[in-house]
Image (tube, rainbow, N blue to C red; front, side, top):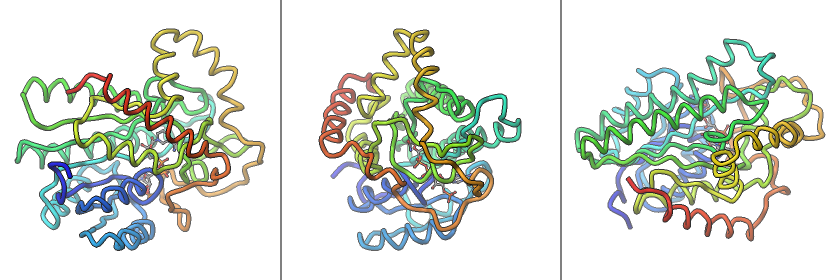
Length: 319
Ligand SMILES: NC(=O)c1ccc[n+]([C@@H]2O[C@H](COP(=O)([O-])OP(=O)(O)OC[C@H]3O[C@@H](n4cnc5c(N)ncnc54)[C@H](OP(=O)(O)O)[C@@H]3O)[C@@H](O)[C@H]2O)c1
């Protein structure tokens, strides 16, 4: 057990995918859980699933683009289940589209959820953590926070921005000699529902660029940073290749992405007109896993990932 055990962890974007898998990890370890997302239905289902662990769980429906709502929810959760010790920002939306088909409104919405939503969560967490001078903020990032790809410009821009904001915050916390820590976990492709409810302006159904990992691999990686939080954790060989590759040979990676990342993100299936989750949550689709179960790289790949993230946890600078 770590020093935070039995305390409150608040997870933004907890009603599906990585956030929901992470809630299971923390609940299983005895944490009190605060769940934030928009969908009442998705939150209720998640809360019901977590009842198996016998820990206190409370959920609040909130849009992370609304800073006041996030702050109020944080205070309510802290009063009910606190003290808050860990805050995890995992909420996101994206639009699959070439840039010339993106509207300004779509770019704004992706930015205010995926980037500003993380900022709002971080500010709410800091306000509570500063009162006690301790805590850990975990930003669920992506290899795309370093290596941008075509067809997801708004999302890549938001993830780069999260990394910039987080690096500034880390420097300030170090300057203050604060005991509050901030860690960004850069994920590879994960099998979550996002590819079935993200807005898509392309004809084919979107998919993550393989290899695709199970959400529990991401949840385990996020949980693993508690003991000794690194400044960043890069999960999986694909993330390491993308981050190191773009640092050393950005022009070559641009060309590789131009050649491979169009077909890599599009499945053979035609995408029908369907509702998306950009402005409103979808009903009936909230779950941990998406539709790529057969494509998951499996136990061997997960083990390789586990070894690699341990190695990079060790190699990364520690705050
Ligand atoms: N899946 C991947 O391949 C992958 C790869 C790298 C990094 N990541 C990162 O992993 C994290 C989770 O992604 P995921 O794949 O698990 O996505 P997901 O399954 O689509 O889950 C997104 C979560 O965010 C919530 N959300 C969306 N808009 C919101 C808003 N305006 N306010 C509050 N909550 C909102 C959703 O719930 P509601 O609909 O109920 O609001 C949901 O709980 C993200 O940070 C993403 O960047 C994912």
